[in-house]
Image 1 (cartoon, rainbow, N blue to C red):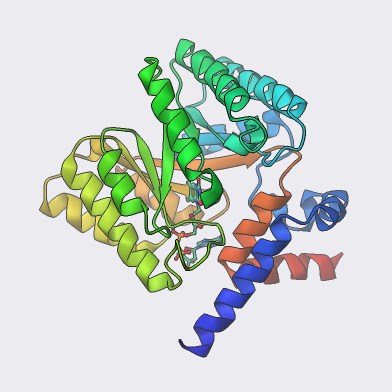
Image 2 (cartoon, rainbow, N blue to C red):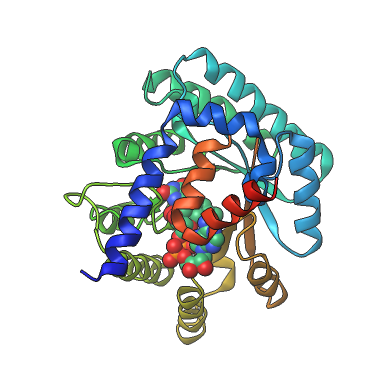
Length: 311
Ligand code: FDA
């Protein structure tokens, strides 16, 4: 393995370890979004987030809104998150913005009580359906992969088809998951979590290759709707070539990117007539999300450090 690769892996795993550190989290929250998290988080309130979505919509970019929160420690916290999602769905309807919602299953208590979590998520999906909206279950670390997929399948079994989840190219198991879940609405990503080499590709090149295989397999099957969530320009160009060469309809997929990342590329894709959705997170609990963004790119950490020095 090259030294650069080892350095990147160390950087990434040290930062991802910080994502779960509650002491550093409370310290970071004290300093607020101004230190640099505001680059990736649309604000702490729904109003701030809707303002950003309105602006994105005006550029031809649709959105998925995420009320930040994950890994709750008491089930009562899920009550308040459910309430926030109901308010969010109402807010989308009332403001008329073009957006759906994303949520994290551990925010709804998956780690504490899977049955209660299912009930919380169901109540959000039911409300979304009544409003003609869609709910994406973000995929967290591999401890929750099976349970998250099960929740999606269970809800579909109940006739609630306005829910989908995410598959991560980093995991060996995903090739099989792509096959067995081919009719569902899925977001495909490289994977943001630190995983053991027993279950996940240790090398980025292998993750990238698997990501392309997943995308190719989904788009060629022409079965479920696919969201291709990446900022990797080489892969986006590869997708564009593939869909032209194999006459894959643009209506069968969309690109997705994160708020604050490669905004000009998002605008360009919209101008080129591709559907592009921006993932817009907001809320008080932005710390773990923010740390995962830093871990993806050393330059992001430099950006934050520069902000701290300027203050
Ligand atoms: P890669 O990491 O190779 O980056 C390609 C290029 O994009 C970089 O060279 C850089 O220029 C730019 N870039 C990437 N990340 C950046 C960042 N943070 N800041 C600035 N520039 C950056 N993961 C997961 O495990 N579960 C999930 O549910 C989701 N959901 C999700 C939704 C959406 C809309 C997106 C875009 C991503 C996710 N992810 C995710 C995260 C995903 O797994 C992955 O960690 C990131 O997208 C980074 O990988 P890229 O595909 O962008 O490629």
